[in-house]
Image 1 (cartoon, helix red, strand yellow):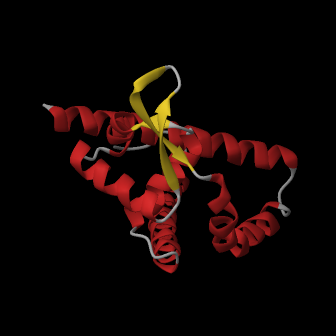
Image 2 (image 1 turned 180 degrees about the vertical axis):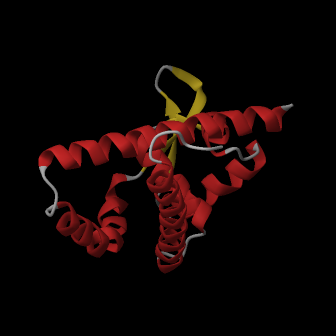
Length: 157
């Protein structure tokens, strides 16, 4: 697909986004390993911190894992004390997977040098530039969400 406006810079951005994505995955793998977790477990804990309490079925849908795999994953996260199972106050038959906030400082500690470096990088940009960068990141995330949905629907067929 040829990009009509700014083809060369657009290709560079796409190439660098792929490179960034790979570096982010590698960083997350090393961070997970340093906490004694598998990468999927680490990212699932992050998803739960983003979503808040959800059911195992909802987590399976988000991650694309089978319900059996999600049950084993939740068991590992519960053993690592990153989540706990609680009865849904609105429907006592449902179990909610709840992130444990007490572990967040430990996880944040692993991200602190990265957070500091990114804060330093952001300090070199104006508020308007940061707003543009933030908008680009949000749009990129939305594109990824749509592609995740598309792929999950094609897997279900």
